[in-house]
Image 1: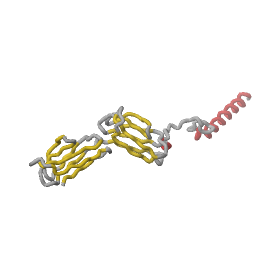
Image 2: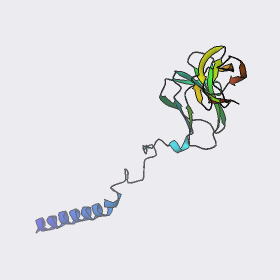
Image 3: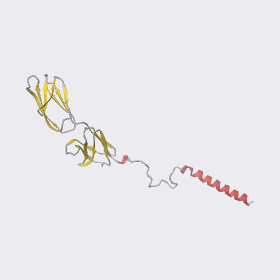
Length: 196
């Protein structure tokens, strides 16, 4: 008789643990019965709380990048990188030829929210020369002959260095100067000169 009472006690204990187990089943997905651990990392980088400036170098040379006068990094051609943890403010960015003070591009970016901003530096400046004079012309830059242009033709002077450049056009028939201009190449953008 005693073993029957013992058996009933064992069955009752097993049933109680089974019921407790069923009641706790929904909480199995939690890492703790008492709630999430405060030290747990949820695995997110939390990029929403960070402003970044992504920079792309397509200039054709290695460039040093500065933000607000402070060096950030050097990028080779066709490379990119990002400035992280940028403060909400207006920032002045410069790209300089590697190891020099020669600025090839600059911009201001007004960082107003925690998001990604971007800046792309394209190839060096070009000058498009357009002949609408009516005759064939010879084109010179800084006293160096470049090419002839027939009427209604245009051609590009590519990869022009920064600084002032003197351009002139001579009539091909008698070398008489018909037009000239000085172009101050001070931005990483394309320029144009139309001869009329």
